Length: 156
Image 1 (tube, helix red, strand yellow):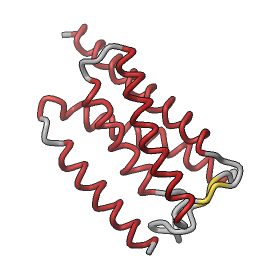
Image 2 (cartoon, one colour):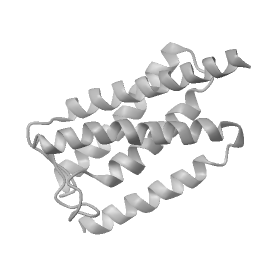
Image 3 (tube, helix red, strand yellow):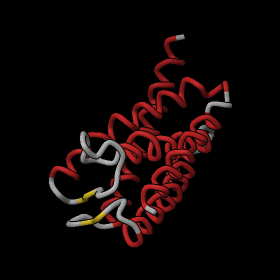
Image 4 (cartoon, helix red, strand yellow):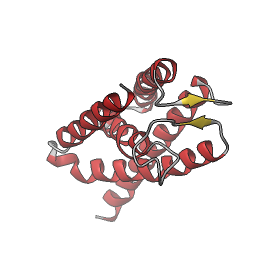
């Protein structure tokens, strides 16, 4: 059953990626957000798994990777793409509030998976660690892209 759920998450993730690329005005930002988020989250994910705070008993390519490739390279980055796309014209308070909501949604899904499946097992990690980490990293990458866009506009 866990493998089926893993494949469902993968299909949903790819569907969301394809759907997110339908906004041509935000294509550069979408790709940049996706890649930055995957890059930064891979460092945190490897650290958390190697320190035995979290374990992913059922995962893709388990022979080669201890971390969850699905979460770190597809689901979390695509959530951040949608977070960026819905906050592209927002002020700081709107960005923070939406970040809190997106993070809550992802954390709730993670907690449900931890409780009812073998996709993730918390050891010294808790849902609060996930929430704070996802929130801070999402907000940081969102503000970093805003800074990149300001620098790009000022050079034109």
